[in-house]
Length: 140
Image 1 (spheres, rainbow, N blue to C red):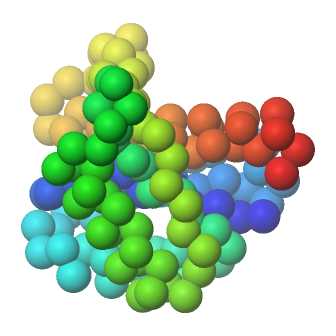
Image 2 (tube, one colour):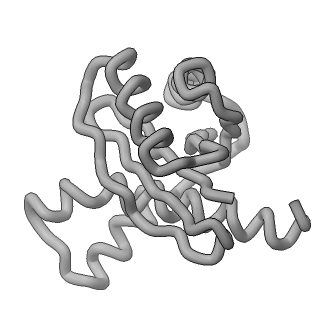
């Protein structure tokens, strides 16, 4: 199944997609858009273009597992994306993925404008890798 992951942000939204065998998660670009509704439409179009069958949206829970304002905004985004794309959308705990993405970029010495351009797609890839590992372990 082709699955697309989304790391929703106020200015930039990262995308990642996996192959049909669900073996490899790859960055699929960044949507640079501040308007919520336009971002939803662009993400839905990206899912259609990549022939996604499921969308995973990062859910930034607080470290204690509660949902704060950012998590609630991602929940609203996931619901709007479900309607716009006509696809199943699931939320996936993304605690610390942006921190991990920055660590990966430090390891590869990615700096400046290039770093800003890719960090959200790398975060989406980390979200997708976590979700794919869960699917393998749980047998889904």
